[in-house]
Image (tube, rainbow, N blue to C red):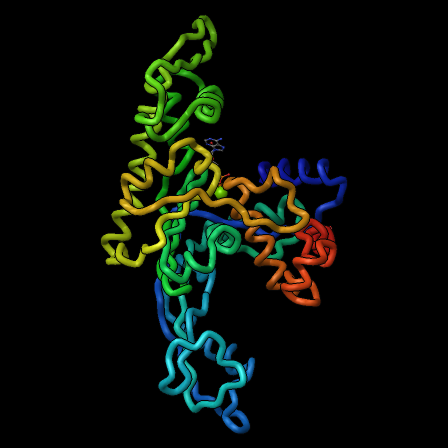
Length: 360
Ligand SMILES: Nc1ncnc2c1ncn2[C@@H]1O[C@H](COP(=O)(O)OP(=O)(O)O)[C@@H](O)[C@H]1O
Ligand SMILES: [Mg+2]
């Protein structure tokens, strides 16, 4: 609750606005996913599929039994089948007797979601909607080609690393491992016997995830504290603390993917995002573990978004704001469509303007 209050106080100070409502980007080690189907009979006039039929088939698909301690976070339609015609993206107005929908369901632990909800409301804000942060990342970081060809998106944050596989533009698998940047900082703190905040600073200033890329002559200063003087250390030594932990995180992700038989789906490679994706040479480390091409992903260009926020650290937040804009019907295209958007910058969707309208 304190973190929420201080983050929102800072946001109010920076924007000069009064914040009332919050949408969350969740992440967590307790994320699980599965794919399932729902089916309904189309009964309306002329057997034309309506918006209500689509809502009904989504309901049917989510009517699965999950354990008491889990909660459905997202039901993402993958594709539809109308009678025997498979692979339909949007069945609205099609004619058929039977409508089937394949969905990707993401669940989280009830207590985590409820605790976040409590934190937001106790801090005095209205809770709008919660999203799994990696869905925001997918929204703003991935290209259509990557989703279509098949890719692995990894959001490597503070305490957790969430990941998601897309294939043929559909989400196939979502999961997480309970480690991220905080564990790297913890390792530095223990190995160099320095406080956590000094370790965090050292990691951000001089850390890296691939020691072969570091000049053996380069040195860093490990800050002193108390009676201890600052000491000079080869940067490679610092990197040799960071690299094994990053490798371990990627190996845990890779294990889950191999165990579920999904490795062959990753044809367009790995896209790394989240705050810890800022570690220099983390792409080389990922390439060595996954054996496929790797790129670092940051939020795509959205009008009204300062360059400073086009960093991997902001992918989830920017993407979730876009998803929420779409959910609430704010157009992400100007009224004239894409072509006009290119011509007239003022007509385009402004994330900042939308946030102001919605939350203040
Ligand atoms: N420049 C940087 N170099 C290395 N790590 C960084 C850098 N900037 C942020 N981080 C790390 O990113 C992590 C936070 O990632 P972020 O995606 O913002 O968190 P969250 O888990 O809340 O989504 C922290 O562990 C932080 O140390
Ligand atoms: Mg993050």
